Length: 385
Image 1 (cartoon, one colour):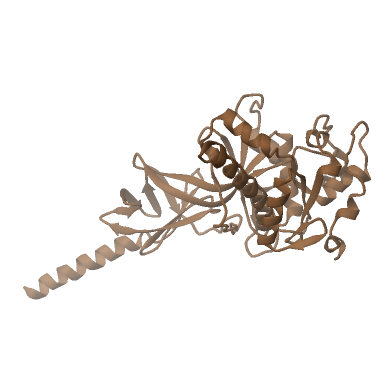
Image 2 (image 1 turned 90 degrees about the horizontal axis):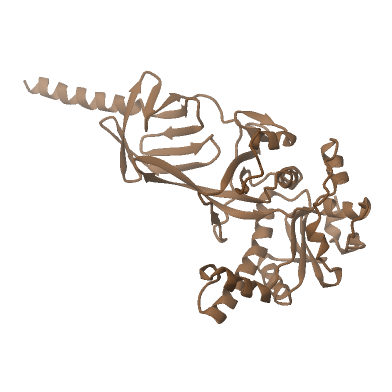
């Protein structure tokens, strides 16, 4: 009798372990983009294999418990039914490998639900050093981005498109520049550079939100330069130079990102010194021209821009605290305008050095280009191979 009881207990334990082990592995959502990885004590969630987040997991009684919530599941052969969706055992490699930049010391923007967010991925092909743009389940050309994002969608509506760029931190700005150009064509002059993703439970469903850094694109273009780098017939940009119109060369200061180093004029700065010097320049209401080289990587470009944006934000907060005894974000629109009037922001950002040089090298008829002898302003490190 004791042997029978012991045998039953062992059988139950083995059966329980066997059921748990059925969950272990990678699962892909059929006709959708969700991917999950299940191990003994953890579950990892992802959107198309690009952004992974791992949570502690408990597997018990055909259910998965994580994020303080229990989900009933069903496993049938090689299929997992989770949240009413069917996942299949996956043995394929993600189309791209993406390592996100980790910039915990900086302020990031959490995207809002009312914005038209368009997901675009740029990363490394597995087991190679080649970087590609991912359009759904295939690699695409930069020129295909507009058609992919909108198709026949009418762009004349009131909702401004926003690009959610899931990009590998080591990607070169030579490639990212193409994305910037395509963004301006579709009037998507703000992108969110993804840093992280979080998941919450809303009405028994897993919802994801992206932690990202708000990145502004300057809407200036030289069609001859774009034709040169894209080798395509240029688009006629008739009104794509608004930022150049109000710049005064005598009141402007060039700052550069060259080979992942920070420069103000020709002088190189550490990150902290760069931030302090920018603070002084903004206090003097200098107009800033912020240019990057094509050999720098995406991670340092984000840092470069974020230091500038953060410096402006700190000054706005300081003025708001002095005038209104609160932070800038808590002010009404008129109060915000009065704060910005004391520190008017005139900057050119996210334009490459060769792109900016092209306005001088290939003049555009009818355009008053306010900058002369730009090469004399560029650090020597830019010209060294």
